[in-house]
Structure formats: C-alpha cells, structure tokens
Length: 240
Image 1 (cartoon, rainbow, N blue to C red):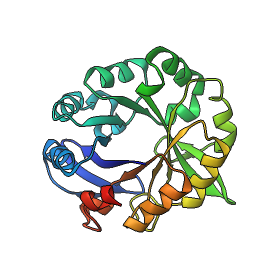
Image 2: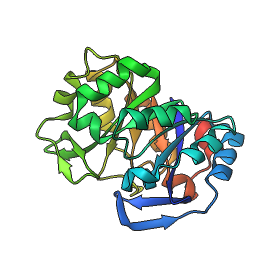
Image 3: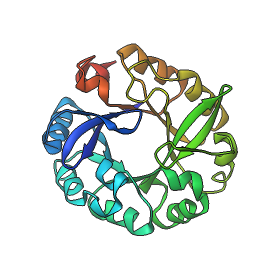
C-alpha cells in the first residue's frame, strides 16, 4: 500500500479544513515546499496536494508551487477545482505525476473518460467524495453540497470501459475528524472493482487504521491531519 502524506494549500499556507468548510480552517505553516521536503526525507515517494485556492477560485491555481514541490524529487498528485482540459494539462506541465479530478468525475464522466484517453490512465486520479446513506455511498459534487441520485457503484459503471486506474474515495463524514477510516467501504470497493487501484481518504488517526486499510484491500492511503497533529510520524507509518 502506498502512503500519500497530504497537504492542503490555501493562498500559500498549509491548512486543513474540517469537513471541507472554508470557515473551519486550521493553519499549519507557510512553507509547503519545506513540508514536502521533510516528507521526502522521511521516505515518502508521493505527496497528495489539494490546491484549495484553485478549488475556491480556478483563476488562482498554484501551478508555480506545484513546480517547486516536484523539483524536490517527490512525486505529486494534485487537484482542486479542476474544471477543464487546460487545467489538467497545466497541472501535468507543472510537473505533477497525476491530476486529481473531483466534481467533474461525478457530474461529467464522459469528459473525464476523454481526458483518460488523451493523457493516459497514469496521469489522472478520479476522486469521489461520498456520503453514506443507508450504508450505501453516494457521490457528492461542488464542495460536497450536491449529492448524486446515483450510487457510487452505478457511476463507476460509466468508467468500466475506460482506462480508469486510480480512484480516490473520501467518506466526507470522516474527513479531518480523526475518527478512523471507513474500512468497510474500501473493503466493499476492492471486492466489487478489483480492477481499480483504490486510495482511501478521510479519518486516518492511528497506525492501526493504516493496517486495517491495507487488510481491507486499499492500494493507497491519504494521511493528512494525523501527521500534523502528531498522532504518529511518517517514518512510523511507512514502517508499519
């Protein structure tokens, strides 16, 4: 399982949002490049970066920051408000290994399938933020404010003939809450679609959580707030 230490960047500041709320911001410093360098030195091969400035206002995408982070040698997957082919191209040209596409992966799968065909399956991670309703995951869009009428499983059928490889799923009820991940969700996804490489996001608070995700079949795990809050070190996470 690949570990993706995560940084959310808003106007050059490393922050975390509680359940995606821009009014519930905790700041963790003003040097994202230094954080990336520390993760690289600790042994990480990947960084997951959320461009919150780009998510809030697409004209303020932080491409220069992506370039400076990738120059450290760490591989980066990044997104935040990706709305067009030009956004995907700009992210990749800035040096990122993968562009993370969120809302459009839910609202316009055919558009994302076109990008997968053009840029290749290794260049795009489709990110699905889900709400659990009666034990069933439903994708959300537009900052979690809109919930799809289709289940995640139904939506993924649209991608079955596409070359989608990397799928990131966040249980939005657990994001930033340090209450443990929804391991049952990822176990179900891995069993239903073993053709996809699942990344788990939301709720990781302990080393036991990481072990549970690996046992559930997750191919990757996003770690954010737990590292900043000192629940464990990245070295400990990688060793477990």
